[in-house]
Each structure stands twice: as structure tokens, then as C-alpha cells.
Amino acid sequence: METAEIYSSGILKKGEEINYCFRAKQVTSFTEGIKGVLVFTDQMFRFLKRPSGWNPKGFDSYISRYWVNVLSTSTSGLVFKKLNVKLRADDTFAIYQFSCDDVENIAHKLVACKNNYIEKVPILTSNIDPTKVNIIVEEGPKDSPMKILQKRLARGEISLDEFNKLIQRT
Image 1 (tube, rainbow, N blue to C red):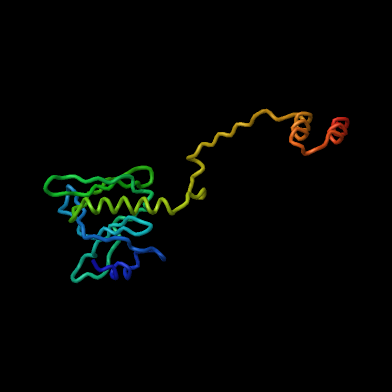
Image 2 (cartoon, rainbow, N blue to C red):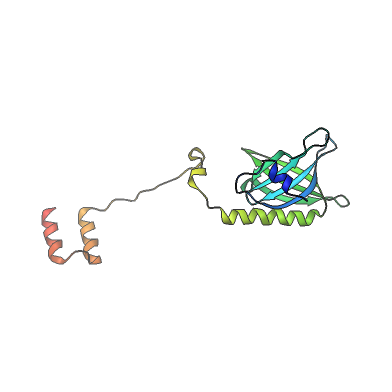
């Protein structure tokens, strides 16, 4: 598949590279399906479709999710194999089915791209919503000044003479 048209369509972010792309058709129970291209980049899972009209050029973004939002992938079908992809969208999820050639190979490449992305991207605390995270901090009892001085003496931070002087002051 020629990737130049995908790059020239302006869908990819700056620095985003295509790892794999495959012709596919999104299968739904209501329509005959949407023909397009599955694109696995170094950052995102994408399904692109051709714009409608005569002699269309470029692609429209139909499904775009970061790899962390790809929850699972599986295959189904005996004769007509389908690729099933479960994607997170906000607080819900959606399952998409795609028919394409060599479904098993595409499923393996999808998982490899996701794992590669997750290994490379560090978890940033700025991406964590503090309203959805419960942090429990338990403070133990605080040491008395006498106990602190005893510990400093035991570690060798202060001499016995300094210890005695400090004890007399407290």
C-alpha cells in the first residue's frame, strides 16, 4: 500500500511514523461496511476512509485512538475471518470489526505496535486525573526530640558530648 497519500492527507501528527497499513473494511450489521485503511503508527491505531465523490484523493480520519486506548484484539469467523478491536472512548468502550486479508498476521502486528508504544512512553503524572485517583497517605507517630537525638547519636552524626549538650537544652 502506498503511504505517501496518507502522509500528504495531513492526518498524522508531526513526527508520527507509519509502522504498518492494510486495506480493510469496517464491518457493521447495519450497512455493507466502510472501505478504508487500517494504519498502525508509532503512536496511534487509526482507520482511515476515502472521502465520498468521484475520484477521491487523500483520506478522512474515521477512528483514531492512542495505543493505550486499545484494550484488546481478537479474531473471529471460520470462512470469513474478521479482526475485532476493543477501543476505549472516554468512560466507555466500543468493539469494531474489520475484514481484511491475513487477519491473524494483522492482529499480531497490532499487538506488537501497542506493546512497543507502551514500552517507550513513560507514564506522566500530568495525564492522571486527580479526581479519579485516591491516594492514601498515612503518617506514623512523630518522634520526640529526645528520640531524634538518640537516633542521631546511634548513627554517629553527633558525638556524646554534643548529645549531652543538646539534651540539657531541651
